Image 1 (tube, one colour):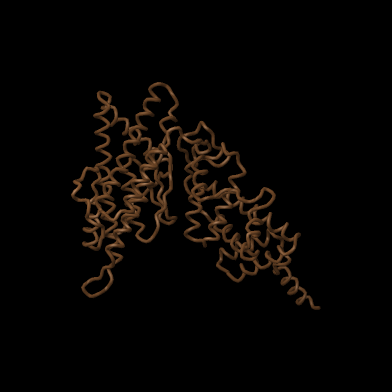
Image 2: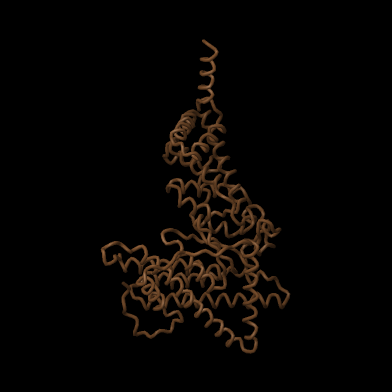
Length: 455
């Protein structure tokens, strides 16, 4: 054999996946995904699946791949991602089966830490995703999924796709302590550059009372399900008023703790951050709605459009209020949009998109005004009921707002304002504003309005 043909043979052997280590094959698969070389990725996945046909090969592939996924998950935490954030990104880019693997990977990684050293918000997020270690300790989640009937080629292809997602997540703001670092002492906010970022926070004493949250969810569920506009309006107003009053009570409690020298944690600690998904289409108006709800509840919001979420900063009770109200108002707005149907101009050309864009923009603007009216009314009511001490409430709330602004400046020192697009459909604007204006947000509208059906 000539020197040339020998070199060609050696090169082919070196490029043959069968002659590569498991680590090298995983690296090849990630490279193929990054460069959109589907055929090369399939070749690697087939090679790994063939190795798993023998016990020796499986003992090489499965633990190695599982540890790679665990390492990538840890890196995602360190880059600022929380379980809900990772899963939200997975729902935007991965198939349902791959999303389930993401949940298993996060559950597996978090199970490596003592529960007391994991921020309660992370545990709650995994629970919300119905996550947790469901496989035996003697096996990996990969083995367990294989036992449930998924063939090796499919399972490994899905896992490699998940691994690629985890490794490619960008740096974002770290809103809470990393797993393994949470402690009872750290209840405030932190950042990537702040010592507080590595401090933990067990569940604050004054998170929103579960009974209050249950009542709010019940009101909002009724608002979303009723076919009567006035009922929906009243339920939404009642939910906002209840959460606003709870926020004021939390502020009073925090002030009292400081006055008596107690631990401020009873008032919920300092401001925190929470990311809330903002999906397309019409993500601009939806971001405006989230911002309006946040401001009405004494929070601040920064929209990260390219990643599909808004970061809301505020005290714990207020964050719960914002998330619940935003979700419900969005459901109600979408329901009204569907009832409005499609639109066309005088030439028969569709203007449905511009109508809906304008509708949601007007809806967000007016809803913000109405929610602030309810919140202001609750402040006035609390001042009156507090007697002589009531004059302390406004400065107290202003001081808490300054704390929120400080956290926002720490996490987002270079925030820029951007336009969500112009309003081009007058009908959409007026109908959207009317839909928001009908909301009896002080909950005292005349009962005669009940009976008008939505849509």
